Image (tube, rainbow, N blue to C red):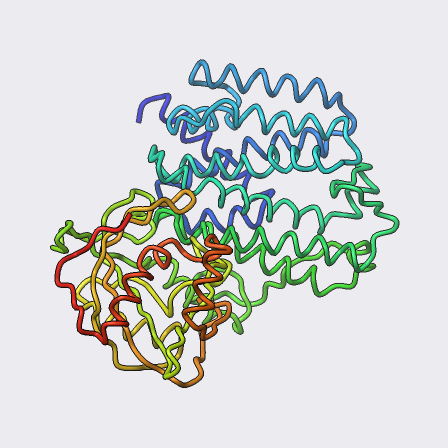
Length: 471
């Protein structure tokens, strides 16, 4: 180890010590990141923590002068590739290695300056502060996790910001009284802390819930070595949020909520009550073992496998299936996708759809997923296959989709994690709905429905062995 490498090691140790001293949630999450990510994230947090300490803690000193010096020292460290301040030395190493853009650093430091002057926030300044103090911190971490993969960064950017926003708003709600009494700050726009009531508390909590839902979607799309560590921080904040929600509004103003920590979880080696250890381990398995899809060429020949989220980020052609189930009256069974799905959440679509797993046949996969999502089994007939390429938000659907048709007259028992609601609908009513509001339906459903209707009208006789291309 050369002398600079030794100094860098000491610097990252300082950032690690800072993280453990100041943040339970960050320290917890970093322990479960892949080894190569730990020091860089310690480096980011140490920098963020020191800036925050200047504006929140050093009341007997000239905070504006300290923050201006910290900003100048940060710029110099990044430009020179070294700093004798170990916290800034580790941060500059992360910035230069992962090419974190300066505008994120400026936005963060600008938000710290707001703490020197702003005491009550309107909606515009609140959003500016959340962006700088929380969302861009998530984006700095995301630069580390994607390791230069710009497509993955762009696909995950929205979700990283939402997760950072959720964490920060929970901090604000937890520290509501302390921020007001000690620092004279009220972050939530239009909030008079002295008139804080249950209605206001519920409105804030609903806003946080939405950020949390979006954040979890993004966690599942992270690279594998980053996924579980970020999820552990999510779990910590989720439990803190539940504790805050359980308190009446007046107690939020009287005490600082903490998530209970009782037992060491033998599965995860962290502090959690035994009552949630099983579900936590189940989620760990789900998070870490991300579903893989089968990559194919345009003739459906298998050419490899890829994680599902990565395939949708890169737009890689992969195998899929769609199931259309009718009742005896000729009505089609639709589902509305759960709002938190990683794309097309809240939209209406066919009975079910997904991807066969490596080594799994299309028909077997269709039957499996129908049972998992809708809670029933029925005979399925292969109708046709089609290939399509469509943008869905920041993701790309590029699928060779095998369509199956079946019959069922019972009552589905849906998985609420996958399906928000269901209904049988006549084709006439469906066509009117789709004409009136096509964006309420998934893109693949809109693309292939006419072909499904033609197949159904033929009595199942119009089998199409060739793969059709639908645009």
